[in-house]
Every structure is written in structure tokens, then in C-alpha cells.
Image (cartoon, rainbow, N blue to C red; front, side):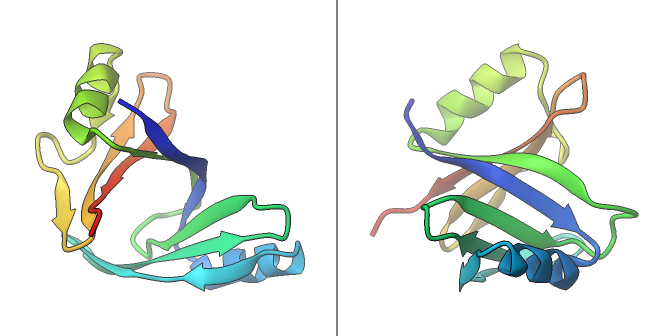
Length: 124
């Protein structure tokens, strides 16, 4: 399994405010795909600064407050998912994985509260 991207991600009920903050810090919006979730469609705003640093901000209106996570893109989703489970990291959707046209994802939380957004993008 290879990690292809690794960066912070903020899940926020006030995503636009978070995006504006990071724009003030020098980040620019790269793209904002809309992903279907069971709670409704969610925009995932990808941002990058001039030094090549990335941050993602996901619009999650149902959350009571911001959640800071680590986004980990991998080339072998099943292998990464199984490895995380061996360390006690649990999928917040039980056995369900979010699958879309662009790839797959799972929000996973460790026993200590670390949130990992595990992602695999489809390559065209």
C-alpha cells in the first residue's frame, strides 16, 4: 500500500468561514467536488498554498463543531482499511464505505479520537 496524498482536513458546520480563514493565510481554492452522503450532499473544498501545502475543508452542517482530521489517500483502499482496523480504528459508517464516481472513502476514528479520512481516487 502506498500513501499518495496526506494532509489535514477540517469537517465544519461553517465551512465557508474556515475557507475564508485559510484564504487569508494564503491558500487558494483548487476544486470543490460535491459528494453524496447519507446526511445530504457535501462539498469538499480542496485548497493549496504557494508552498504546495494542501488542506481540505468539508461542509458538514450536521456537526456541532469543527472536527480536525487527517486525509490519507492510498493506492490500495482495502489493504489500508484492514491495517487501520487492526489498530482499533473504526469506520464511523460500520461496514459501509462511501463510493462515488471519483473513488471511495471512509471516515475512521481511533480509540483515542484521531479522525482519519481514508480515500482512494479512481484513476482514469
